[in-house]
Image (cartoon, rainbow, N blue to C red; front, side, top):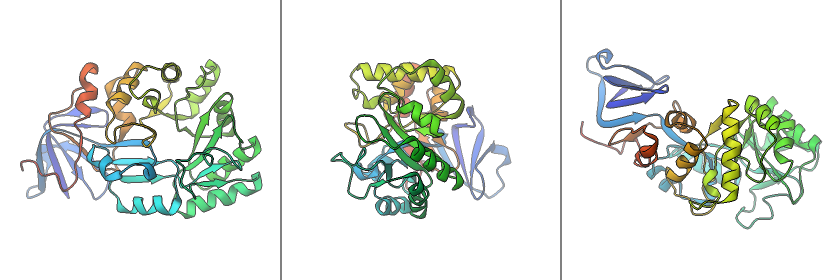
Length: 330
């Protein structure tokens, strides 16, 4: 068992001083330094230690995961790719990964018509009767999430098929993540029982009743910076407005960037953090939305954690994954 001793340990939603983080076996825990057993292995670090940072929307076929880890991200959710290739990357464990396997789509549906979607990354679901097989194939390939698409302007999964996919996933104990883009698609995902939206909705201002209902049952992944990559756009304004109302109704948000989609940093993204602040989240809430306490390697901020909104994003951009290769003064 190893103990991490730092100036500050941010864990369980608050900062601890004079404390140590106990690493495995078993759940991690923060305890007073005085409770470290005599002769225990300790690593002493300046600055702050916090749970591993997670990007909950990544496409590993489109990025270099070693660069992502070097940029401070300890854990990713891969939300659509070739199952065997994603599984092989997940087996490396650096960064840690949870993945959805293929996009489950209507015949000819999004994103099978996109050049960035590799052959084998989409699985067409031809009927409600085909839904259980599609979910079972993804699960057999190691998926612990199911990804479906609802993209207006192209073939859409019929309501009965989408509901059958959600039902099959629920029976398998797997949450369903939906790409919902275009009028009516968020409502369709909600009515089918989808658990997570892969993006904060951006193509329309949602009806407040739908936002309220979604906040009671769904999680939204942020992906706000894909709209403009640092330049103001109407789409980002719409997304931030929807997210602000979702949060006001008590909705749960996960930090995610859709990494691989355009010029996004393969690291902690300060622009995404800034957009979350503009949507009404505070730094502590953002940390809760982007940390993985028990699955990921911890995060180290050499200069400490700055929770002031004006400087928070730049502080977190200095994050390093606290793997065995990181050896500050002992």
